[in-house]
Length: 585
Image (tube, rainbow, N blue to C red; front, side, top):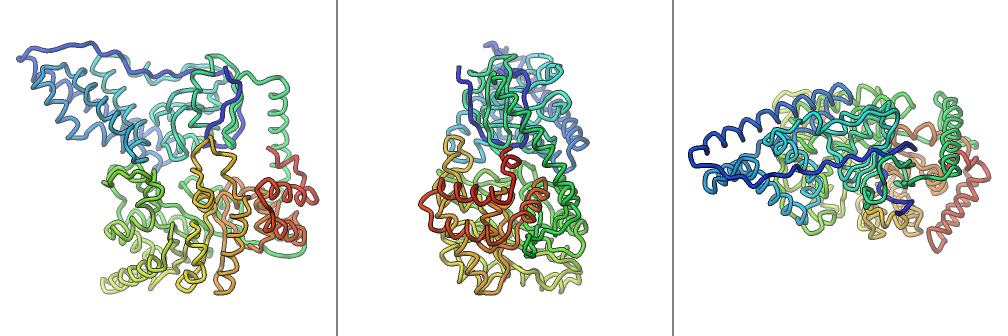
């Protein structure tokens, strides 16, 4: 049995408790046939089961709405869509009528066919939806076989526990009691899985993609997990547990220190003011960003409006949400990223072709420009919400100047149409570029001629530069923005923006990590967009780091030969002005 496993950290925090194993195996379906005169009754039984399950999903959605929020409750739309899929149900009914299969036998046959098809698919979206299909298959077979659904989806009671499963469905995750379930581990899933989104919203540390977890973690074994790094230790030693407790104590000490920075400006010891904005992925991150002093929103992600939903969001719905965010930050800029669809983020209602490598395929700005019926309502929503507020549009995954030009032209067309219709809206909004590919870095000077601003997306820039899938736990050590190739590109982008006289910021995870912040300050960045929980920490770092120290480290990093050397340089520089023990959490 391996003592250490590595997965993908999807919800931060350190937790330890005995493991509770959730084995949601499919029920055994007996090979039962029916008589011809029983066909209609069997079809009726199938349809009745679908109705019951849809009602159950609606109730679960309401529970999520009460615990996590309105938008998060819509993650069950995808499961509802699968349960009511007319093509699937038509095929099941055909098996009942033509082959005289029982309803459960016919449904299992079709579900297994779908699972094999989706698992073998090159579409990351379909593979991501396997957990939803698994959940519906479990519910349908249990209902048709007369099993106790409540027992199937319940979580054992206990004082404290770490739940370990092959995959975590939203239906199971929403039942978790934060008072007792202190951590989650699953063999399947990524940062964008529905269960991961819920775990983050509920504040439960979680690691997904932990291959072999069920094999190596026995029921009742003590499990120590780190939802930030993805590291899992089975039966930790006394020293390892003590170290975890020390880290938690240090974190509490740091939190106490950080409380004193909330009302202080983010200014370096030598007087350089840094603009700290907030990243907002889900609506429940608005309040923490405001509370921690964010100067507006530097990255407002919009994918939650579409991912997993049965229907696309309306223009009115988007305008209302953008206005809600803007009202929370009066007088500050709100930078809205256009739909970053593709890869693993296609909405259930959007029919996309399978791709062998979706992260290098049809995604982001390419999808928006190819489907103006998706993009134009978002442009109109932004224009309407920007009537009396500072809203800006950011285009993701840009690799060509004409992508910016076409977007600006479409924005102008929609502004003119709104004026003609007498709708109150802004005449235009600034359009900027998210720099997240080496191609965008190389042509940054040309992009700057058409852009109102740049914002570096360090996550994808690292992924595409290093040819490393950021969701691959096996390659986690190779996924680092401290590689000299990334450091040099960061310098190039900033220089191009400064020559053009446009603001340049960083909005990826790099802007939320203390030593990376030191590097960015040294390179000359003075605008960072930060995950809301990290805002106090980043402000604290800014107030501790003299610019000459940061500049010296950055200049040396530009000449470094590898990421290990860059890390060493940053830690040495940080050690002169920061208590690194507080950062090694």
